[in-house]
Image (cartoon, rainbow, N blue to C red):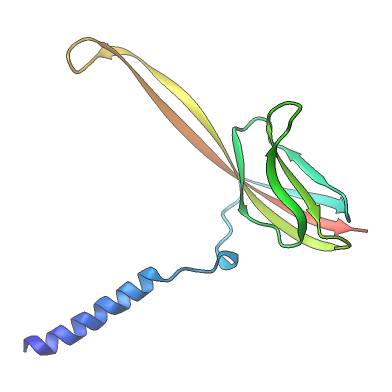
Length: 140
């Protein structure tokens, strides 16, 4: 009786393990729900720059498909993050990039009774994330 139960149990565990280990290819991953969609028209071989000056960091969550340059960097004039896009040479058509921005807020708590009865200050941080999709139309 034990042998009859053991084989189905092993097969079941292998099926579950196989499903949990599979990963989707990066280009087939779901695009996050955008907090903002920007429609940008870019003339072929020219640059598009998005200044995200009110945020601490910006990263590419899903890379564009038709680019010569698609990167985040710091603006040297004011020290804020920017996203820069230049389409492939002679490319016209549609392209899209997904950016993820974040901003961390530092919160300080009041003085209160600490573990040993003394005063202590409690500080915490809160990080908010914001997804931006830029839909490019590259024209001649």
